[in-house]
View 1 (cartoon, rainbow, N blue to C red):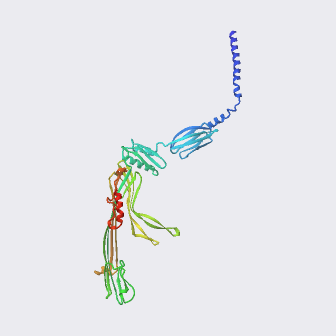
View 2 (cartoon, helix red, strand yellow):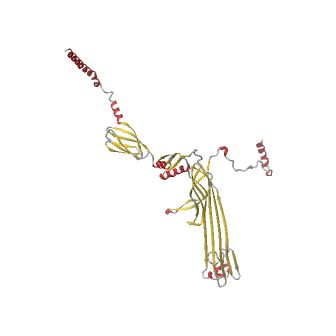
View 3 (cartoon, one colour):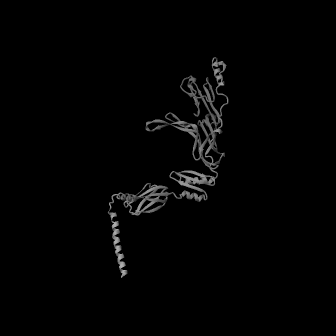
Length: 470
């Protein structure tokens, strides 16, 4: 009985405590919520601009992004780096295209989330190829739209040059920047090219022709092959001196004024030789092209359209050299293009009164690999020209013995030989104390005193000289 009373007392006590606690908590929601009202939109704004973090993706691969709300719209900053498309209500497919970082924004469910999508280039095809061909070499590849950069260190010059050639073959439209280092570091980055052009031109000419002519009171005659100039007979007057017009006396000339009979003989043999030598020196930076021209320019008139306006364009001629060096340790790889051109008026054309000459050009282009100070020669650039012109009078030229008097001929032979000798050298800039003196004359340019035979000017010059001496 006593136990039952105790339980009833405890139950009554608990019933009395619960209303009291409820009464203590009830005033809290009853208080005005005016100051807390602005906090609710701030929380909602924080949720709508939530940061989704960073997404890592390799170029050429895809991933699916799942969000906890229904998607209404998506946007990405640069579709060239990565592309995104909503495939489900809560799924976004992201495709990596090229290396870079873009922002992906997803809207839905009254909120938006922003992600940073980082596209890693991964291991490119060029990197895989170089790793397979040159195992053990430390070659790093960086590829962009316009350039391919090779960095690291290699063991030999051959590996360095071959890696650059492979990079140019894989990416033919991009510029290859070869920064591979050899053991011992990189030396000079400038190449001086010493070039010697030697040209020899030999020519020979032989001409032979015979012309007979005669005039009288009742006749006038002449034999000629029209290859060489012959006397012209004009008019019907008896005065033969006035009827004959001499355009060229040629080599041998005979004329009898009384009988009116004469002969002209063309017999000429010439030989000539021409030598030309040019020694240009040119300096270029590693991987950069340099050119040299020793010659001139000649004008070429150009007619503009239907208006007939003539403009002048200048063309270059002379000795030209273009080369591009590639330094790989102590080895120099050269792409050389020497050229020698000269004006040729014999093959020129005439346009509206302008005589435009042609160009005789000899050109070579090659790739060579040398060490510092070594030389190579480009020889065998021969140009042989042989021309033979003959003229004869029919029937008369076939007569025995005297038939040669009715023939003429001209033989011309010309031979041109060009040799180019090239020596590359690695050079360094000079310090101020290493600059050699200029080749000047030692004697004084102007005399210190004026000669005495110049009269009163001598007296004016002496005080100036003494003042300078003091």
